[in-house]
Amino acid sequence: MSLERTLTVRVERISRQTPEILAFELAHPWGRALPGYEAGAHIDVHMPGGFSRQYSLARWSLSNAPSNAASSYVIGVKREAESRGGSASMHERVREGDLLAISAPRNTFALREEAGHHLLMAGGIGMTPLLAMAQALAARGASFTLCVFARSEEHLAFADALHSPALAPHLRLHLDQGGASQRIDLRALLAERTPDTHLYVCGPGGFMKAVREAAAHWPEDTLHAEYFAAPTDANTSTGLPFTLRLAQRGISVAVAADQTAVDALHEVGIDIPVSCQQGLCGTCVVEGDGEGAEHRDFCLTGSERRHKVALCCSRAKGRELVLQL
Image (tube, rainbow, N blue to C red; front, side, top):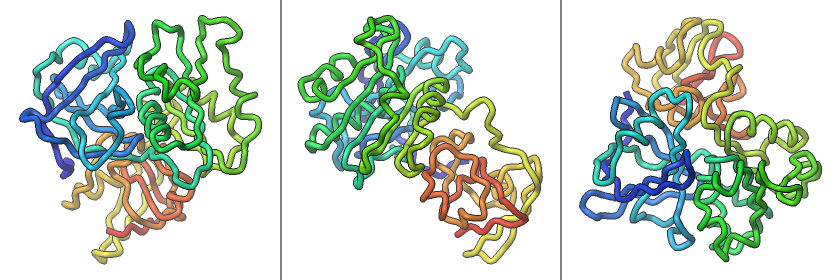
């Protein structure tokens, strides 16, 4: 169970972006402001059928720039052909005027202030957080390039925002069904890196893998990724048994080979908020001896892993893992 704040929102507007993607605008039922957020943030959406999924926050235009409060949230939901229930529920059961429970925004995919140039790479619906990033960067006059990969113009979500005067000069569009002039060579694009460039990527698993392979020579702390789901070959749960030492409480908790650290803590009455349980969303991240952890998450950077641990999936390298709990 999560102790995170839960908000109730009304579905203000639903608009079709592509044959497979709907955009949902969510507002406070009484017209009040919602908690503000920075570009790259996401929310948990609890939907009909008991499903809960994480969706990145987009914006319609530059006028929706981040602040301490937001008039509404916008998410894009792709109807997956092999949906486990979440996207099907949003597309088939949610209507304008409905009330939904959501989490407050969280951000494990934030823009890096130290970057001199930001290279944003979006595959399909992965454009959602990167669109918000591009708009935030344009608003502050920062240096950036937004590369968007889609099958065709028909499959390009939030097209009006992408082609706006503020973003158009920074946009590079790759269309699978377009001509040679509408293609981007990943390896050529990522072959060289200027010292102050940071790379941000979000999209389907195959796209993510291709980008990471093409950027394998980039320093780890300059590559930032937001995953839809853990890679199919990822092991995010089982391993050797170990012990959690909770430094602030002065106690130890055993974790079995087929048990996650979160489950072990829940068994002794210590509540750790969880959501995706795949190491994607960052909900369960705590301070700890990251050097002693076997990290299996997809939300922490290399530098963050030195002092943080995602408890839903990570384990100890040895017999013990120290946490600041």
